Image 1 (cartoon, helix red, strand yellow):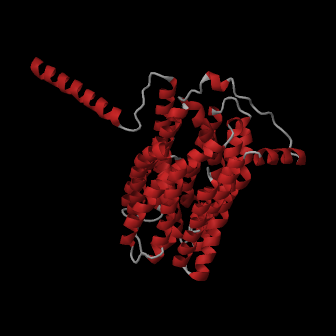
Image 2: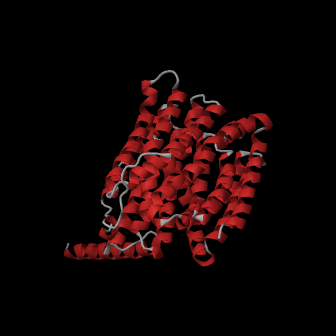
Image 3: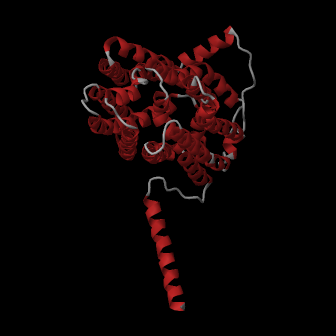
Amino acid sequence: MRRISKLAARLTSGGKELVSRIGQRLPWHTTVDTLEGRNTRNLYAETTWFGIVNGLAATFVSVFALRMGATTTQVGWLAALPALVNIVWLIPAARIIERQRRRLPLILWSGLLQRLGYIFMALMPLLIAAGRVEALIVINTLITLPAAVINTAITSLIPDLTSPERRGDVVSVRWLILAVAATGAALLGGWFLDLVPVPLNYQLLLGTGAVLSLISLRYLRRIRVPDTVLYGRETRPRERYSWQRLRTSLASVRSHRQFLRFSLASFIFYWGLYLPGALWSVFRVRDLGASDGWIGLIAVIVDGSTIAGYFLWAKISAKRGNRWVLVVTALGVTVYSLLTAVVPTIGWMIPTSLLGGFAWAGCNLAMFNVMLGVCPPERRPTYIAMYTALMNVTAFAGPLLGAALSGWIGIRPAFVVSSAVRGLGVLLFLALVR
């Protein structure tokens, strides 16, 4: 018996050592003997649990609306109204953030409200018999309010938690983890939806994802901002709006020419990105006849290729620079939309989705890094909010314009128009971003 116990102890010890060695080779491994290491690990854990509901919502909310009888125009409003909220809310939200010396409590409360919104979305069909599509659109729009606060706050918080040398790796790994979690959620979700009737399947899926994502708040609470950042941070008092203040703010923005150049190029490129925003689900479900299982499979392929892309593009970016990666991957995203316009069956969405996910990983990473680089550190939350609000103009109007365009010239030609606008954005990146 003692020999068996000794053998079991050796196997356990050897197994732990093997797991530790494998874990140290993973890209998200970080030591926990420093404040930066502990913060990074908690940030990764938070991202993992939040990625579940994020992946489910991004993949299946629009399909949920279609299964309940939504029209193409209603799907367009489902995508557009959250962007409209962001246009008018992001800058006030950023000013609220800047007035806080300790920003984590605000992040926690915003995160809680966001998760509760998805729980209410899951319960909605039990409470409403008529007008479910309209109710889904309203709930999805209201969720944008706390989401805008937490997204802006965490984005502006990352440079405070990480050193400049590690920041690029932390950002790429965080998005990598988000993609892994979304991939797993979409894969299981697509399989589950075919087993249970509508709308109960979507209710169970979104409700379970929202409840699991509440675990992420536990890890957010463990993050500690360094004292040098916390006490060196100048909080901004509440100010009244006036024309003089507006002119001063505009003059400050105009003085940052790199920010203006990058924002202009991004603005044009995002028009091309969001034009088909309401058409992806419609195209796959109505034109190609995709089942929920196919929808989940395509989401997994996109997320899986995105994961692979984050591995590769982070290394290439360190060698070639963010501008080179931005131009090359933005061109790949442009070709993805053009190829989508000509696929004959749902099966052909597999290779195009591989290209789209792989290219978008590098494009998203490069755009984020460039955006952080052109924002003045002392006003980072406000500049991030201004940039995001400007992009949300396209996120609001793009899907509505795309839906109208598809009704006029057809859904496939609408994807061709999207590619042309994206191509113009690529040329502006090439000309304006330095």
